[in-house]
Image 1 (tube, rainbow, N blue to C red):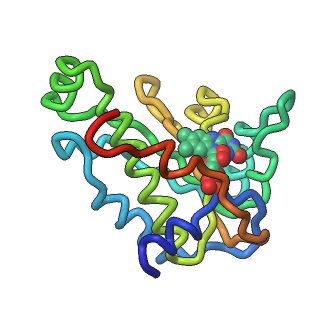
Image 2 (cartoon, protein in one colour; image 1 turned 60 degrees about the vertical axis):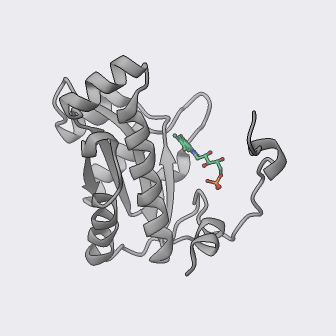
Image 3 (cartoon, protein in one colour; image 1 turned 90 degrees about the horizontal axis):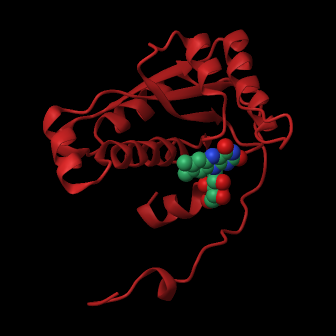
Length: 179
Ligand SMILES: Cc1cc2nc3c(=O)[nH]c(=O)nc-3n(C[C@H](O)[C@H](O)[C@H](O)COP(=O)(O)O)c2cc1C
């Protein structure tokens, strides 16, 4: 698949088939994430793959907002993955402080894109979840107290159709030679 086709194809999947995801495909996704760029090559990330159905359901439930009713679909997917923020290299921390930029968050965003795009290329659906009960997820997955869970991903075979993308026009998001 060429890159533009892949970018068109990837979408936030909120309907899943119950079919399990092959371990080789999960490993291929993580392998591509391993190659993602990061400030000072810090690679400030760790992925926890949750494919045990009992633990997975606990994680799904931790992302379900009972009042706003977000993320109910997370119960349907066969696999969830937690993206943990690991400490960046000292040089990246210092650089970030000097330039007043959270480089490690940029790194996390980039690797998250790699995750979703590689999954799409393998015919798998994903959705990034920013809305979840972080303390609960940390307890369930035994994440050390001083670490943050940046995002959860749902992962599995897509049951729904492809939606038309709603995006700003190129004119609104790009200019040449001045703002
Ligand atoms: C950081 C981040 C957090 C997100 N959190 C959620 C979420 O909690 N629940 C959800 O259904 N979608 C979530 N999304 C998906 C966005 O809603 C989605 O990417 C956007 O609407 C564009 O749609 P598309 O991904 O289908 O192209 C999140 C996306 C990002 C990048």
